Image (tube, rainbow, N blue to C red; front, side, top):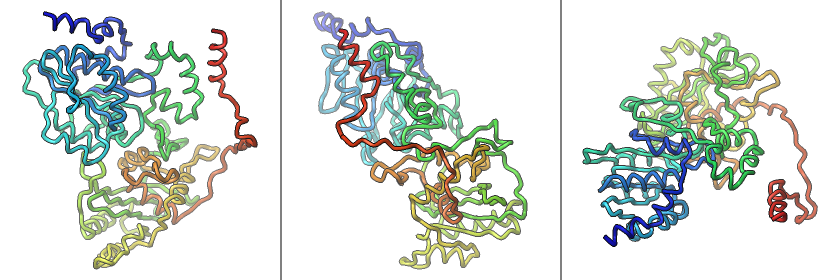
Length: 479
């Protein structure tokens, strides 16, 4: 009796009595879908919702096994471990060596992290009724898929489920966007299993009251960051390299202010090109292009050697297999058949230190390439130059809407943490690589953009005070 009375006076019950979830959070709490994602803009109250959802499930269903994950141990500690230790004090026992809260009804909530490929192995063979990925887009797709295999239950009164909270951006952006935003399902994926609940800062009344200027700070961000952080636009996000890439179906036909267009048969007089990036354990990529009289490039066809449903995993084709498929396509495809095709590829394929080089294998079979310029940062700048719109809304690079792998991978590329001007090479950058080889083969000047005059500060202490800081100080002085 004393144990029950103590439990009812635990901090968690007082908090539950005082909390008033916003409508989106209530929708998240009610969801029993096998996969539920709650995300979008910053400040929507997603972390609180995930933490509280796990606690409510553990309290309601006896003997439940739950796993709550963040990318790093530090994030896990600050965002969930410490708040839960406070909330569940006097109610659930905390097993420090297991990072697990044990509830009076036998439910167990384990807190975990996954910051490297080796971290994934700690979940191999584990079994959970519920898994929660907090900031899910920070997890690699292969991590999300592998850990999800631990979802299984023997309970008759409970259906196993996974919850995700997420913002646009991160290494898992493409995976979450495909399933919950684009709803582009592959074989074996049931659309009825996936529910997306959009989150916006305006939903979070607690934050709006505590920090009224938060929205104004988001509104003051550059356009692409404002669209991601304030509006929850999944087509742009923090750290995105090619943020100018536009996919506007309304203009696929007139080709204005969009880089993606409806496919058409290119005139026979336009030159044909083939760009190539070799991969074995990682995907290989082949792109076919044409160039019009103005020097504008069009990506008309692609061959991407990636295992279906496994991002950045190569099909392990040998060079001979790749080149024979290239020959077949160029022999049979109406856009390419009978045309002279100029090839450009990564200079690494001329490496003969281990026997016949990949380039030599291609020449033996009749597939020829010129050495590409492999300078990375200049190559990325050439892609930027071609993506820029002129005053009419016309770029120097178009993509046929049928080139789905280009459109899947290029928008997800992010800047490297160690080389800020370069693309993070740990991401799926193979299509981007062969694209820059071709762009470096046909360099163009940057389209003139609006110029800004940099500010000069002679005194390092003579800095303007942000307006929101001044307003905060004024309020404090009044008090």
